[in-house]
Length: 221
Image (cartoon, rainbow, N blue to C red; front, side, top):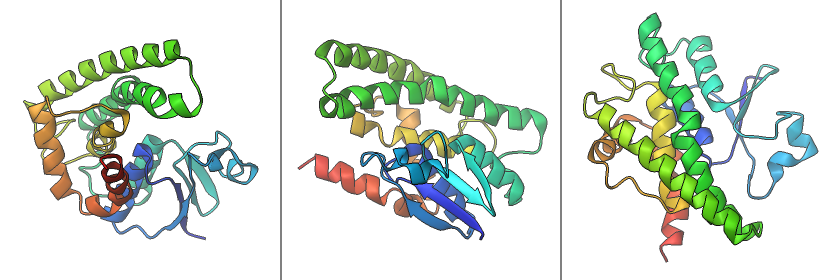
């Protein structure tokens, strides 16, 4: 059966997995699953991923969710170049640190603002709930981007090293979609330089971000 990817192109975790697959020419079949259409909650998709989230992969019958886990699995199962997920224990720990940090910092703040500014009006959240989500999201994102900017003043890549890792791919996909939630990274020069650098180093950048860029352009009209 080969490798199958279940994805939504507007989803940060989905685009990160797609970039890793495409940049390394890993053959796979794409199944588009719309989060906003609630297709992830359908009975058929929950046979793929009982948690009802994307991305998911099915690799010759083996089902796996969670983008960071999928990326680690692909690095090991496809023997990808070492810089993505180094064999050296300390270098790998640095990559794992940023992948774990991502969940409770950068992504946490981003998700709070998406809930407030995107899902709030759709799902009729109370104004108090929206205000609380915005306040928390703004505070967490400011702290997260400041921390990233400081780290990137010392290294071209988020986990150090001389080449990008899967931590760079995961985090940069989050950063570039901040405008959807009404946030920005323009006040963080090292983060800006890092995004620009990765946009040229990740070969599939334009293809993977095509849907996101089209959506952002439509929001400006």
